[in-house]
Image (cartoon, rainbow, N blue to C red; front, side, top):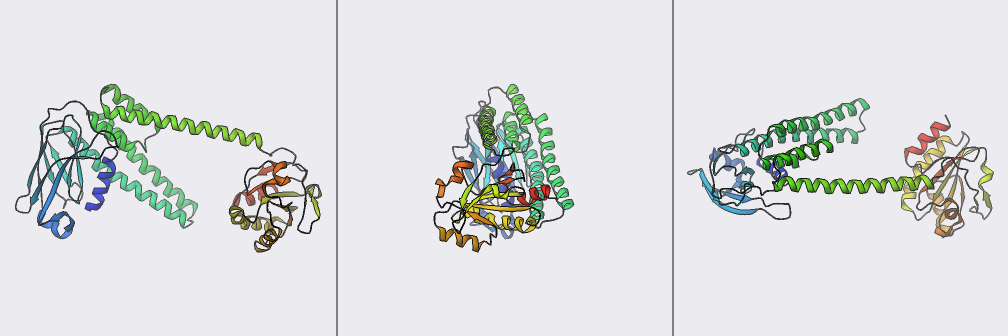
Amino acid sequence: MKIQITRFILIGVVGLVFSCGQKSGNSFEVKGTIKNIEKLASQYPSLFRNDSIKLYLYEVPFGKELPPVQLDSTYVTSKNNSFTLSANPEHIEMLDVMLENGPMIPLVNDEKNLTVEIDLDNKENFYSVKGSPASQQLRDFIIGYSERSNAAENAFKNLDSLKLQSSSDSALLNATSQKNNSIESINIFSRQFLSSVKHPVVAAFILSTTSATLPASEFEAALNKQIQTHPSDLNLQHLQKQFEDRKMQQAQRDAQMREQQQKQQLNSWIGKKAPELLLPDVNGKNISLDAFKGKYVLIDFWASWCRPCRDENPNVVKAFNQFKNKNFTILGVSLDKEKENWIKAIQSDQLTWTHVSDLAYWDSKAVEIYKFEGIPFNVLIDPKGTVIAENLRGEALSIKLQEVLQ
């Protein structure tokens, strides 16, 4: 495990945690050693300053708003690889021993004296803790969680890579299963720790770290259980407030989504008769929608100045060429203002179907009659003049036409 990776993992996890809990006995001392220093100079030269490694002791303040507070610092060398860091923290909280330009080691001052042994040459377990049950459990969780988190990250990358390569369905299903299994492995591991954890700082750390993977209902139940056990712990209270805020925000988003869906349903043309539309074509001749009865017709509302419309046109051209001989056609309705730009876009995009426009921009009769608020927009009409679909974009147009014209 390289230092850069280790540091990223630990800082990323520690950044989720909030410190400050019950009153401590004030004095706190960390004694430790860094093993195999002579091997580190060539592997990790950024650690060294004048042949020494600097270490810091930080307090992680309550909440994310405040930066860590330096409590003490010291040096180790190849000749003297032992160190002592001390402080007088007011509460039992999260503390970090950090190697300058190296990894960060989270601790809990549940005891006044503890011992840390750091061995960066040991890729699997680069540090150990004695004298602090909470710090030991924290360490065990971080090491196990990091292994599973790395596996999950690799599974996600593999799935994304297969999607970019347009791999087979079986390969995508297998990769998706591996991704889901890696997430469940994280959750199983976290559940086991939560069931045995005794210290609120460690519990808050585990909960905040796994809040993104645990199901919301399970996270809430686990959080409530810890709060019942440790009702005065500010870490857990902060997590609960965050969770309640997120629930409220999600409820607001859900309400907005339902309102939007209801509005869309009210304004939808599906199942209704398509209103008559009479507009001039490129030659000034009035074209009636009724003239297309007996065919499947896509009324395509667009404009030469509308970039999303122009980006969508290749999909419309593809569908037209595929189904134009199967009782299907398109009526293009433009919201252009300038006739020259309109005709030029028709030719440039190879839109070889009937086109109409009153060149009135958003004051067009088409907008007034069909009441759409944005383009591109379209409605698909069956031979009897009833709208059977709307707003078909991308492959959805060809799929729907394949369905009705099979």
